[in-house]
Length: 195
Image 1 (tube, rainbow, N blue to C red):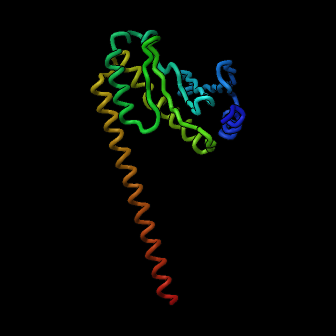
Image 2 (cartoon, rainbow, N blue to C red; image 1 turned 60 degrees about the vertical axis):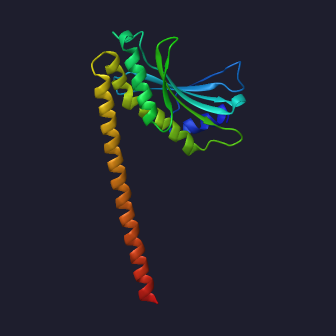
């Protein structure tokens, strides 16, 4: 996986305003692209780093929030760490981390590249998951730090959201199953009529 291939993927995805940073300690540099959470919202930066010598491709959103710069956040470190552990338990792809050295919260997806090429579809999937999870939990992380929401309330909110998503997904799968069964029955009926 090369920076050039990543550039092609980003261009295909429609993100042309990216920066490339060389890293003397690695075979390949990394790309970074910024977006705003809403029209006048906060700026986030996604780093896409192919670490060829370790056969890894990393998608990283750094400094989502920082307990040292958020208002009254220092006292919420324990609750923030618990909330991040809870989220990581619920998330299938990626993880949130709290860097104790500088107090920043990051999100990572790390995938092995080995000798295989990451497809465009896999690349886009990782970008979308990174952005979506950052967007979904950003306000909750800030609210917890600022003591605007309790840990218990946020956990209950996430649980309810996951249950609702599961219900919607099951309903969609059931609806698709019924459609497939109706098509199969219609096909069987046509075959019996023609024979």
